[in-house]
Length: 408
Image (cartoon, rainbow, N blue to C red; front, side, top):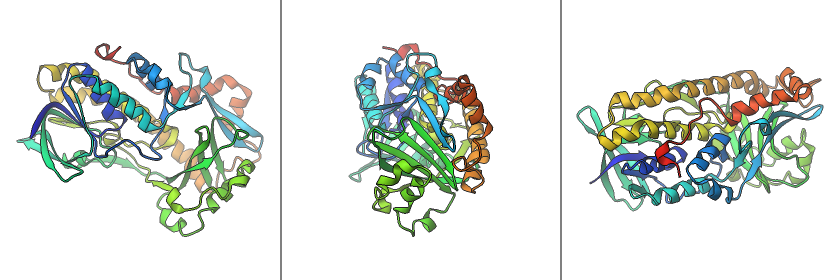
């Protein structure tokens, strides 16, 4: 049995950021990560302008810029009239008017290295939290199991669940989310990219297809949306048909229809959209996907999770330094982050209903249609309007700034 002031469960973006910030506040913090490294294919790799500004404020901007990355500053949609701009991030004010595409493991390694430089920071890899420890009505820590089978307990004044949409801690605390139906799941896979291909991010809505292409330099990180629950049925066919179907509306893909050789290269993301009504119990706080699972639409999940961590660190550092955060302290985190969460999920639900569901039903086809939808036509006529989706995507609602105690 060991003790710490704050036990953070989950070494994703929210957990690593929260651990670093609390350690810089002088709080003893232990982060548990069940895997031995951060290497995961098809984790979200989008780092938004607000997150990069945060890294600058933490003194990590120069190290971040040295990482292999590509930059996305325009979003285009192929239509019958050609590639139509939808969002222009260069219109954003500030030092970083773009989205950086960085392998998530590199970002997590950066945060882990910065955390290890703080005396109160401990990162325990290969350590999986299995259940909550209770002291009466209060949660006082977690039981864990290491990859070698060793089991133990960590007692803490506060436990923070950053263990994702399938959170073991959330379930163990009896916290149940409100869920919204989603029209799709997503297939993640990689396709080779050539210099002659279109640059930036692309969205395809044509003939019962809805596919997002993210420019990663030498390859496209591709998310092909499929009707909810159809994965097992569709996987009975030839995997090569995925790219062949995409090459029909996008002829520049015709020379790589054999790029996918096995269904093992196609990873399924079970798309969920949910939100807890209450994010805490006495001694426990949920943030990130453990509090609100986001749709992959817009790639904003990482950014929101990190913003949750910043708000939690700012509001809870002082109570943790002097004793134990009260339930009132924990409730303040939800109040701070709820407007951004609700508005973002409302936008995603609207896009699900108005764009993605009709596209998957074959009711939207802007490749073969007579003309693009009205919003795209307006943005082509008045390019300044492209700044609106760019702001929503790049800045979001209520961005958080680094607390003074964490700046370097």
